[in-house]
Amino acid sequence: QVDFAIPKRFDLVYVNENNEEQTPLCIHRAPLGTHERFIGFLIEHFGGDFPLWLAPKQVVILPISDKYLDYTKTIKKQLLENNIRVYVDSRSEKIGAKIRDAELKKIPVMLIAGEKEESDCTASVRRRHKGDLGAKSIKKLIPELAKEINKRRRH
Image (tube, rainbow, N blue to C red; front, side):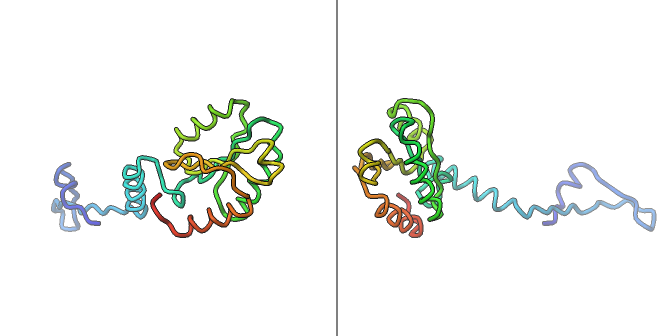
């Protein structure tokens, strides 16, 4: 983009081949500028509360205690294999605190794993804006999430 105002505003001049003063042209090049502005508009529009398909962290897995970390890692591996962005909150906090933190971070999907979920190969599902949806089979849940992500809907 060519800018005529900046050189005049700063009284920029150069001496040309005829020994005369001339005002230069200022050329701006910002190949990423429009992309950065667009991302800024998206963040502002959603207030960080992105729909599932757009969220940087789509799913968080919350183990009830450290005993279930191996099970949560198994779930994480399956989700990652299906290109779902996921992490495990392995902190030694109470489950209520982990849920609250995930809500504050605006994570769209929370999967809670404990003894019953491990024995049934399920996870207790909580959705932002929808609350507790109960236990779901991991084998059924993953295709549902993948389908929702591919549809690219708001909430």
